[in-house]
Image (cartoon, rainbow, N blue to C red; front, side, top):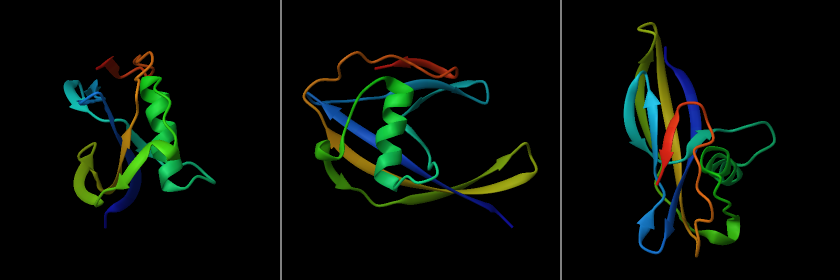
Length: 112
């Protein structure tokens, strides 16, 4: 039986550019968007907002949100043993200025 995980994603647009992250996932460099798991007491939109700041140093708010997009799910295996079923809730935001983007987590290579 798969372990269920829920996370939120922030798709942030500024001046026709999408905020993206280069990060190391299992030793491979991949292009990603800010996302992460819910913390106690958070709603799913608050999770997207917090994860965006924690990973990129970019501040967004509920006022910047344009829409909630269709959630999607995928399966993966962790350590060749545990099957994970992850559901991602994406939210689209627009800001006038990215401010000072900066990779803030250990696995992050860069923020563009």
